[in-house]
Image (cartoon, rainbow, N blue to C red; front, top):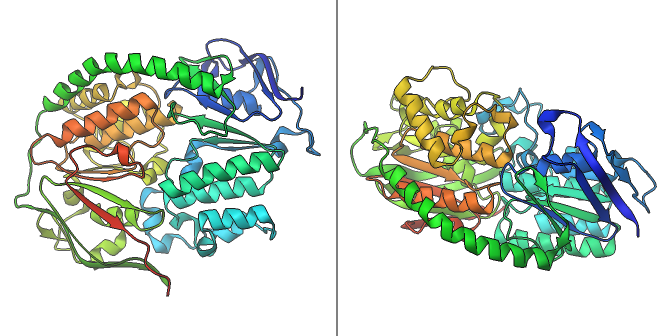
Length: 491
């Protein structure tokens, strides 16, 4: 049998990047693999061993990529990591850059980054599946998080890899696209010498085309098992976990209820009011004459297909989009542009989004990341008072990351980073909580934890919620209103 990748007693040279035990693993030709486990379990470290990214002390990987003409891992293995969901970001990228058209002169087009593509069947199917034709002449920075994921998947598949590794490939995609993507990947593995490795945090959500699963937990790599066997084992373990979690959820509810109220500086019933708001970039219309009223205490679910303008709408509310000052928008009963500062707007709002996760490249201790939410900064520029640090620790404990307070943010797993950014959004006890795909990258258990926290927060007095998700089961039961955005027709 052909062994595409073999690891034998593999140990990373850097002690800080080692798993708890040496790794033995074989990926055989024809197997489609899922690596599953909770946040911070070591899944990404295992991928780094498989791809040869980490220098090893022993157990160097061996590869057999036949029928590929190249024997190099670089040519045969393509890896879409979690942050690739949001596009590349470096020190020159800043949070509001997507909304500032004057800062986009040197940003490449989607067409340029995809390169020349041939008119073959796979290319055409990918373009049809993801609706890429209208995006080709769009600057990459203007893509929504869902559109960016479609771009990254297309780019990787067009490179004809022998092995494609994808970190949570379905997050950020609407339900129809998720189903079609799963079907396409299954067909491609049947038609091409392609093996797919999925890195999944939702441990119960293993696509049917996957043949084998490797569980990773507590920095230990488990035995490879058939998909059906893994799902049976997970179901038993999860049933037991649900019973024990009920006690923890009761504690969480009491913790959220006990958070001291921070007070409010506004009065009146209107929280958000948009009057015939339109947003255009060049010849593209994102929002067209949108009317929307959100009143105090309402809980809104904001939905729409990828690219329909959900994140643009939220950027207007949070004053991150320069066009917000040219629109008829009122927040907390006050008309935008009547002399208020951005801080006066943001001090009542808690916000987390894929764009924020993309831009947050500060390698500060995690408690300082949470504390930056007190003044809504990217980084910590005002030293928090002792009582403010106490508030930060309270929310870190609620989100289950209290033990990570001194860990550098960029050394956390992507799921742990998302929990820290969620704690940052809640730390000011905001009057308006805006959650844009808040459960991205979270494992099965942390998704349940965060959903319960959102539920508990919504029971606090006079709290208003706007939440975006492509998974209906992620929405809290307290949702009172819904708004669905549609892409404006191309004329």
